[in-house]
Structure formats: C-alpha cells, structure tokens
Length: 230
Image 1 (cartoon, rainbow, N blue to C red):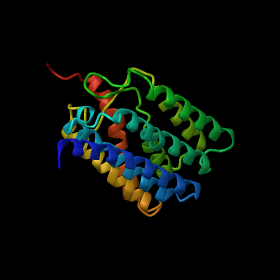
Image 2: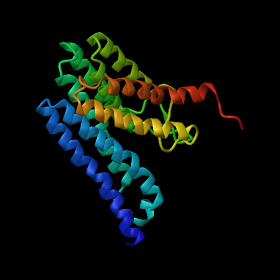
Image 3: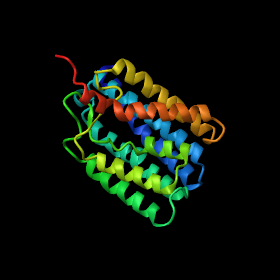
C-alpha cells in the first residue's frame, strides 16, 4: 500500500464520523439515548485516532484533494455539538424555556468557537472550553441534576469557550500526556459502559465517568497554575 493510499484511507476513516453521526441522530429521534451515546462514543474514538494518523501519513501532502481539517470540523460540529444539544432538549431534562435557551446557547456559541482562529495554544491544547458538548451531555444524562443546575452548567461552559483558560488535548498536549491519554481512554470506556447500561444499571461506570471528566476539564487549568519548568 503506497503512502498516498494510506493518506487517503485516513480521510475515509475521518468521514466515517458522518455515518456515526447519522446513526446517533436516528437513535436520538427515536429517544434511544443509550444507542445515541454509544454511536457518539464511537465517533469520539475515531476522532481521537484519525489526527495522529493524518500527521503520520502527512495527508496535507499525500492526499491534498480533501481538506482534512474542514472535514473534521464538520463532523465534530455534528457529533460534539448539534446532536448532543438536540438530545438535551428532547430528553425532557430541561423544563420549558430552559431547553430552548440551552440549545440556542450551545449551537450559537459553538459555531463561533469552531471558527475562532485562537482555538489552539502553542502546546496544542485548546484555549477555552473546546465545545465538547457530547462529553458534557453524557455526564448530565448520567447524573440527571435539577434543570436549573443543568442550565447553569451549560451557561458556564459556553462562557468558558471564550475565556483564556487552557483545556488539554488528550493526544496532542505533551505535558502530562502519559496520564491524560489513559484517562481519556478510560473516559471512552466508562461512557460506552454507562450508555450501554442506559445510565441506571451501572453506577460504577457513572462514577468513573465523573472522575475522568473532572480531570479532563481541569488538567489544562492546573497546568496554567503550575507552569512547566524550563
């Protein structure tokens, strides 16, 4: 297999995220939240591995017909933002007008963030909350807090998208990567386990989901508070 074929195969792998997004949306429309999250977790896993493969096979040079960054952003908006926002609205976890506020805030703020040229920091982390609403919403489904708490949480994360706060990339942020990457993989496992059990039969998975999510949210901020020694 030539390097150009391998590079093209990476684009094809990235594009499967659109298929998983459709499967997740179909599950969401039918209120099969467990299967919706399972497909979103699969898409999340694909998104985690296609980037390193794209750099390994230099897709910008060897498969330049397709813009991998644009393809990735389109799929990310579907799987990270649009479908989770719909699920939060349609699930009934938010009462009345609070659901409308949440989906407007999530989709509007995320559209701006995904086009923000300041999204990435010099160490390949994210500046501001990186619009990972798929992760946030699965935690909400697992814990089912009061709708006022959900609305406050959503608003806080939306504001955090545009604050000078650092959020780690599980693969590309080198500092603490030997800890961050295993925790991110554990998050994927806990999320799939919790969703497969419909969030009610697997309290251990829900606890693991909360712990790993807390690390992924605060690791970057902790790095800023404790700068690396030169």
